[in-house]
Image (cartoon, rainbow, N blue to C red; front, side, top):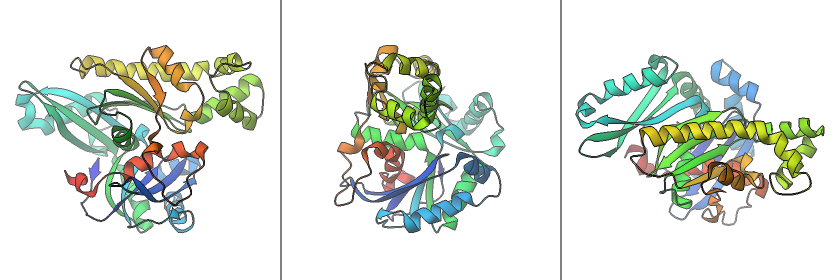
Length: 351
């Protein structure tokens, strides 16, 4: 997390991903949505914007703020969520004696586990637990280029950036408040083009993982296997999915390779947590979020494969849109990350 400076003005969430930008403002005391909006992006142009000199991101943020807001935004002070796949987050335990030289210990961890030089990263860390023998440290690292580009794009649209964090951290904040997130939980965030996986324990993300498979991948898989148009494949995905039915077997066969790769990554993240972090705390549940969570039967699939309770998270029971028109049901899941960003209280930015 790059904490740039603190302000006590109302905070709005700005979620920047490879496939879209979302913005939302929430009165966190009442869980009342004051304003929201989104714009779809072309992944190739986002990549050019984050790695080159393109103004594509800045132009789309400006367009979103001017033309596509439902309701209103009470300030221009934002918390930016960046793609989790472009960040590195993990938790590790160290002897209490190391606390005096914690910065050096974190740098060793970065050198050991992150495949790019530390000099190219913004690195943030905090002690989230301690006992007589050990401290537990949460570390987050993100490419300096990506943060600088996202901040510059927001600022060029008139935003004042108060904080930057990986999208999965924002999802965790929302689930902690709405979905028994105090229980040790696996979060599986299936976006359009990628899936982020994390372990949430005691309100903190402990470890993250991810892979480039998402809801759009599922649609392509079905279209190829059944030799049908993408639009028809999407309908099959959201109407039939993995539920029992005449076509279920063919759909399941089409999705099997992608689902197996997601399962492999989930097991890897769970193994890291169990072997290096858990301190005998058992993972209690798996929560599926993101636009890919709208596939019927996805919760039951993970329950059966991982032999643990799994379900699609639904924080919308707590979020109140008041008099604003709500996003269409099939689009609601895309707002989970930005709702988590918007639900931060200004004072907690510099806790």
